[in-house]
Image (cartoon, rainbow, N blue to C red; front, side):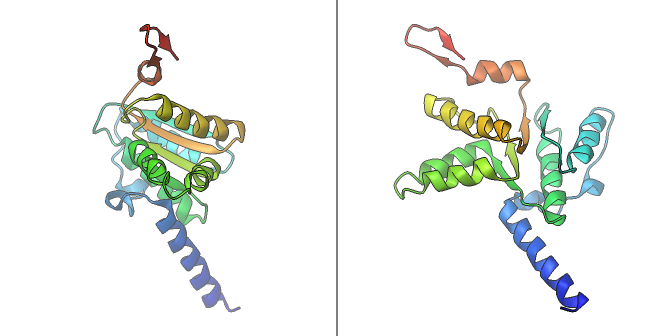
Length: 179
């Protein structure tokens, strides 16, 4: 195969990876050069550059609404896909909706397997979903599996870790919190 054909095939593979990454269209072409670095986000941008490496486990990006968390996570996903590495990007509410939509078709296990086993998973806007026992079980299943298998996971949220724990907990009939 000539070098032109090799390049064409590589570009075709990257194009497929970019499409399968499911990065929102608003961010699908963003790169680090499109991101404005400020004193408030410099550490997050440095961590994002660091995360591009293969052996990195994950990144938790938290901050107020409108600070560029989703854009930064999308840039990471874009960079990984351009490098020929599989990545899956989804907002948590959309992911849970997609899982629910597979109940009737019997494809739930396949969807969960894809999400659980993606080499790099971006879970955008954790905490925006409405909490229920089912939601808690699904998220625990996904995140716990990925943690145990040492798979790269990037999470964005507007909540601090403590606030997330409060949101993730479920109250029993007696009012006690089950976290």
